[in-house]
Amino acid sequence: MMDQEDGDLTRAALARLDECDDVRFKRVMVSLIGHLHAFVREVDLTTEEWIAAIDFLTATGQCCTAQRQEFILLSDTLGVSMLVVTQDQARQKGAGNGAAAATEATVQGPYYWDGARDFPLGHDIGEGVPGEATFYSGRVTDTEGAPVVGALLDVWSGDGEGVYDMQINGQSEMLARGRFRTDDQGRYWFWSIRPGYYPVPMDGPVGRMLERMGRHPNRPGHIHMKVVADGFVPVTTHLFVGDSPYLDSDAVFGVRESLVVDFEEHAPGEAPDGRVMPSRYWSAHYDFRLAPSRA
Image (tube, rainbow, N blue to C red; front, side, top):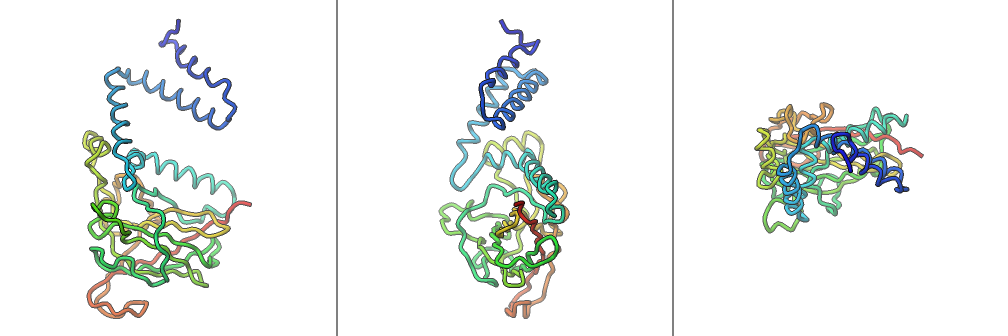
């Protein structure tokens, strides 16, 4: 007989892992079981509440499609994704490879779409997308300031109203997405739109959870970038619009002060790359710093 109050059930569950020969997997599962059992005891969880939790997770999985990852959204809105990101970067900083000076990472989010097209520097990935034209530029360097030649920037964002291509019914073509490589001085430049703030999807189980929590669902305006180069630690990050609402209360806890960028407004006329703009446009400059990979 097992006495749950004395923790015999927990000890029995943990003992089932005695023959596990995967050290890391065993460590993770021992901690998971221990914390989960402690949580059940701490809140005095009822059978009805546990079944409701199972139903919630089932609904979360059923909501996932090739265009929508509700589990990533759940992880993001509970702060778990960002916690994992910050722990990953803390490990890099502890490696003594200059990572402390590298660009900070943030969450990938649920809208990454692998396979975006490669474009030449200066291309406009915002063509046909609602929003105000914005010129993005900067450099990719190592943590000492030396240029990283041929670094790949994989870029994506929603439109000026915060809508991603994945959210548009029947939209099979990528919008506001593209990949660029830095030149021989580590420079990049391209056109897109000035992203607007937006709510995360509220029509699924995560949205209902946020409503019940009394939380708003909004993310500040941002553009996503993955920056990758041979010999360097890749970084997945955002550039946040400096005057966007919700910078202080991002629904997925992803804002880092170092990633908030001033978007400068410009009158119609010649842009930095020589393009003549018939209406006002914006510009955003940001330099990425990559830490060298460990040997």
